[in-house]
Image 1 (tube, protein in one colour):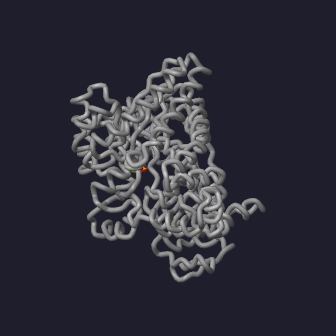
Image 2 (tube, helix red, strand yellow):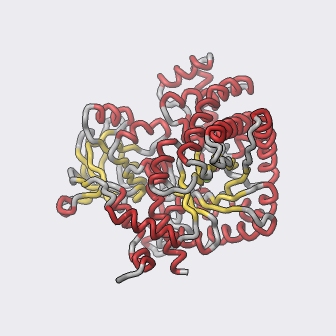
Image 3 (tube, rainbow, N blue to C red):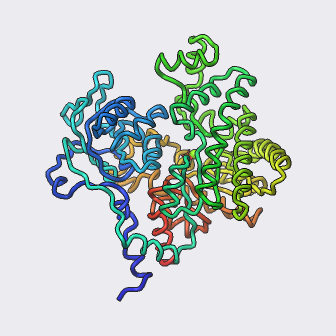
Length: 517
Ligand code: PEP
Ligand code: MG
C-alpha cells in the first residue's frame, strides 16, 4: 500500500496534459507521417482542414468544418479565428509569442515557429518538406511535441477521470506554494477556478480588447493625436474594463486578483485592412492618410522592447488613471455585493526598470484610487506592486521595493532581456544551440535557473531586506513548467501563476517540490 506522498511523487506532472487536452488516437498516430516540427507551444492534438485567415476559420467552423489555422504569426485580430480552430500553426514566434500565450490560455493546441514552412498566404498554400499544402487539405498537429502530420489523425477528447480529483486533493495537502492563474477574461477565470486556481496572478488588460466589438475603442485610444481625443476614447474603454474586472472578482470569490496595467506592443493592435483603417478614420473624424501615418509611426522593429508597459503610463498618465478607476470601482461594487469577501485589488505596474518611474505611476494610481474609495464610503484596501521583468529592476530591487508592495516575476521578458534575444525570434537559432549542446532546453519554456534564476533570488533578497512583508510570485510562462515551479518553491516565492489549463500541473509540481525538499 502506497502513501499519499508516494502517490503524488509518482505522477509526472506533464502527463496531466493528457487528461486535460484532446490526444491523438494511438492506432491512428502510428500511421501518421511527420512532415515537420515546430515548437510545442500549447499541448493537445488537433486535426482539421487548413485555413489561412481568422475570418475563414470562423466561417468554416460555422458551416461545421474542423479547421487548423495556419498563419505566419498571429495578432489580436486573429483571436476569433483562433477560438474557432481545433489547432493553430505558426511559421514565426517562440514559446512566449502571441500565438503561444493566447492558445495556452484558451487551452487550444498550438505549434509555433515552424521555420521550415515556406508560406504563400496570398495563394493560400504553403510548402513543408517538399509537399505543398493548400486551403482545405487535412493537417494534424501535436502541441505537446510540436509534430506536424500530413492528413487525418483521429483525436480523442480530453477526459478528466475519477482519480484526478483525489490526486489533486492530496497534492494540495503537501504544497506550500499557492497556485494562481493568468486569466484575462471572466471565462478563463472560471475555467481556472474549476481547475483549482487560488487567485489571478496576471490579468493582461490589453488582452481584454481582443473581441471584435472592443478593439475599435482601443484603436481610437492608441491612434489619438491629442489628450482630449485620448480621454474620449478612454471614456469608452472604462465601462468595458470595469465590467470585466467585476466579473473577474466575482469569479474569484474574494481570492486575490492582480490586474496588470496596459502593456501592449501598440503596433499589434492597429488595423491592417483598408476597410478597418477606413472605419477608424471615420470614428475619429480623420483622413485615412493620417491614420496610416499613425500606424506607420507605431511600428517598432523590436516590438517587445519599445513603447509599452509603464512607459505608456508615463507618457499618457490618463491611461493609468482610467484603469485605476475601473479596478477600484469594480472592486467596490463587488465588495458591496459580498460583504463577507475581502476584495483587495492588486494593481501591477509592468516593465519597471527604475524606481522613479514606478513612483510616478504609483502616485497617479494612489491619487485616483483614494478619490474613488473616499467617495464610495466603502472600506477597501489595495496594493500597488510591480512586475520584475527588466534586469535593472532585479538589480535595484531594494530601491524598487520601497515603492512596490509586491513583486511578480515576468520571466518571459526577464529571459528575453537577460539573454538579449527576442522572445519572438529566438526559434530561428535555438535549434543550432540544441544541436551543438549549448542549450538543453528552450529558456522561454524552462527557466534558466543559473542566470535568470540568480536575478530572481537577488531581487527577492534585496526586496525583502527593505520590505519584509513583500509578497512575490511569478507570472511568466515558466509558472506552469514543473521544474521551474520546483525552483520557485526553493527560492521562496509565495505563488506561481500560469494559464488555466496548467493550474493542475503547477499544483502537482508544487506538491512534489515540497515533498522532495
Ligand atoms: C512576462 O514578461 O513574463 C509576462 C508575464 O508578461 P508578458 O508575457 O505579457 O510580457
Ligand atoms: Mg512582460
